Length: 402
Image (cartoon, rainbow, N blue to C red; front, side, top):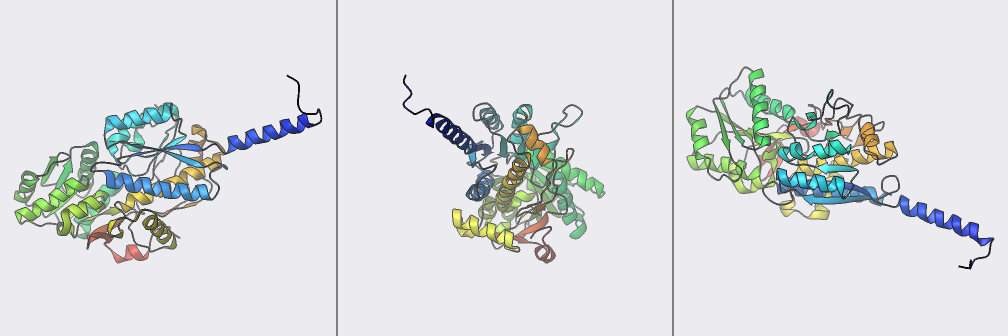
């Protein structure tokens, strides 16, 4: 075919085409997986986490993206089912070609699914899942590098706080443990028993129940008959509400102290007045006690307008939000979306990342993939349908927050 352009124009045209091609490539989105339960009993956590991630991704994209490229979230509902989580992990790795994954609410889903990311050398930031084993599946010497990170307070930290609250601060000596039958509940129960043993205490009753159980009478009667002065819990919102409501039906009211899930909206709403006074570890409480937190809360409420002005799971939203900024910082530092380079950057972040949970200053190392240290969480308390600070000094002195 005859060249329609004069000879002098051809080099200019080729230069323009190359520049256009490079510009188009630079604008290709960075695909990041976002998986969690957006339906079912765990959905307050999943939806809040997803919305916190969306907020951060939108902010980053409006500021120019990462490496000049926009973040594209590839969202999937795992329904809090292990088998569904496995299917999603395989799809996101093999079909969608994500460069990282954010999410995992349920410990069981994490433990079942994240091996596919590990095998593909794709980093995972668990921004809600708290089981102590989550970041320990792929450790040396069997695995040279671990691609599983976390931005939530693991259950070793939480169980120690729960026991300190019950035994040290509130001086109870007879405790009962009620935990659900999931990996989350049973691993948490093990951590609680270890923490109690470190204080020289053995639970007077240890009871188990299943997801969707609506009658806790048997378990509560055993705890009551054993002389329990306080109930320690590891479960999620709907079943936790059944515990609180079950105590009310029996006319037996003792304090509830449990894992962070006692802050879930569907515990507070389903238990109503029976939720009052429940206490739990929290990395984030929906109070604007720093400029960063106020900006985050205002942005969340404006974007999603939740009922009663309450984020369904504030902890999940905040940790999801922070996980995006940590990942973006790692990709920028790596100058690449290669999984191994992102992992290496996460393990040695050279710039502090100011989040709403905390300010992250070298949060990870090669051998420690836990961003939340024991000094970050505080004890929250359900009061008037909201979670507030149980202790005023924690509200006045947020840890490492601008």
